[in-house]
Length: 255
Image (cartoon, rainbow, N blue to C red; front, side, top):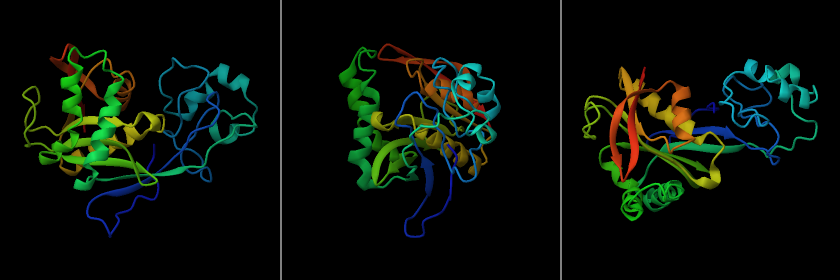
C-alpha cells in the first residue's frame, strides 16, 4: 500500500500518515489501491483473483503475464493496468487509513484487536488461555517500544510495536537490533494491506535510527504475515524457542 498525502498533523504529537485503501464488493475481481487519477504504482495491486495460490503481485508486468486473468477480462483498462477489470467491477470508495502513534487512551481497543487477531490460532497453542492473556496486554509494550496504530474512520483496526536498538528484548535477538513485535490487524479489516503499511512504518523508523538491519520473530502458522515478510525481503536467520508448542524463528532484513 502506498502512502498518499503523507503529513505530520500539527495538532497531534508524533506520526500521522493517511493512506488510501479499498476493496471490491465482488471477490472475483481484481482490487487496485491508491489514486485512480494517476494510475496504480507497482505495489498497489492484490494477487490475481483467478490464481488464489499465486504469490502477491508486486509489478504490473506480472499481472499482464497471467493469461487466465487476461483472457477472462475485457480490455477497458489494459493501457493503465497492464490487465483489465470487468466492465461491471464495483469498487467501494477508497477509505482513509491513518497510521499514527499510540496514546494511552488506545489501550483497550488495541488489546481487543490483538486478542481478535490471535484468536484464529487458539487451537494451535497448547495453552491458549495463557497465550490469550499475554497478547491481550499488547499495550504494555509501550514501556519499551513505539506502538504504531492503523485506524479507519476513527476505529482502530491494527497495530505493531517498533522496538529500537538498545531497548530490552528477548535473548534470541541481538540487543543492538531494532525489531518488529506483535503485528496485528482486526480480522474484519484484513485484505487492505494494513499489515504491510504498519511493517513499512517500522522499517522507516529503523532507517531513521540508522540501523543496518531490522529483525522480527514469527511462525509458519501465520500464513499471511510470514509470506508477506519474505516478499518484503526478510530472510530466515535462526530458529527460536517455541511458544506453547508453536514453532517460531527469527528473520532479518538488511536496510
